[in-house]
Image (cartoon, rainbow, N blue to C red; front, side, top):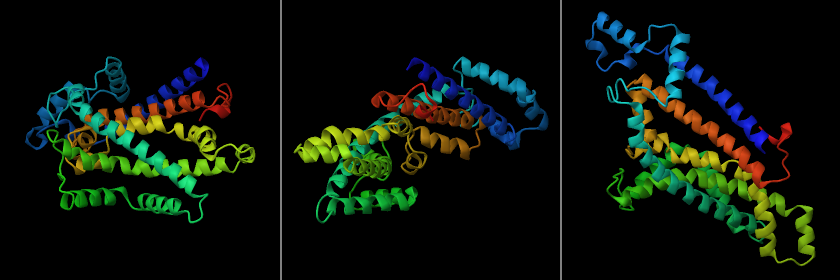
Length: 316
C-alpha cells in the first residue's frame, strides 16, 4: 500500500508540475493590462517600471523559478486589479468558507438522493411495471441532455417566482441557501443514480446472486449485503473528486446567485483581467482535480481487496 501511494503521489506532483509550467507560460503571453489597475492612464515609463518591479521583464525560466519559490513558501502572489496590493492568500481565505459550507451540504444531499434513487431504480427493474426505473430514467436523461445552465436558471426562476425563495444569495438569510444548494446537487444526484443503478443491475445478474436466491436468502439481505456493497466499489473512486470539486463551488452557480465564493471569484478575476489572481485560482482548481483522482484511486484500492496495488492494472 505504501509503495502504491508513494507512486501515485509522485505522479500527481509531476502532473501538477506540468500544469503549473504550462499555465504560467501561457499567462505570460496574455496582455500586460492584467497587471495594472488603471492601465490606460499610465505612461510607457510607468508601465515599464511596474513590469520591472514585478519581474515580468525577466527571462521566462527565471520568472518560473521565482514563482516555484513563492509556491514553496505558500505565497500565491498579490492581486493587481481585483483588490490592488492585497495578498491572494487573504482574498481566498475570505471566499473559501462560503464555498465549503454550500459545497458540503450539496454533496451530502446529492449523495443521499442519488444513492436512494439508484437503489429504487435498480429494485424497480425486477417489478412488473418498472415505474421507479422509468421515472428515474426520465429524470436522468433530462439532467444529462439539458445544458446545466438551462436547468439552473429554471430552478432559480421557479423557486423565486412560485416558491417565494430569494433569487440571490444572502449569507444572513438561511433560506437563500436552498436554491444554490439544490442547483449544485442536482447534477451529481443524477450521476450517482445512473451509475449505481447500472452497477446494481449488473451485480444482480451475476451467478453468486442467483445462487443466493436459489438458497432462499431474503431479497433485502442480498441487495444490502451483496449487490449494493459490490456496486459501490467502482463508484467510490469518483466520490473524493466530487467532494473536493463541490466544496469549492460551481463557477456558474455562484455567479448566477451572486455568491461571494471561489467560483464567483474566478469569474470576476477573468472579467477584470487580473492575471495573477486567475493564475492562483486555476492552480487551486488543478490541485483539487489531481487530489480527487489520487484519493479516488487510493480509496478504491482500500475498499476492494481484489485490486492489486503493485500491478499496473491497479492504477490509472
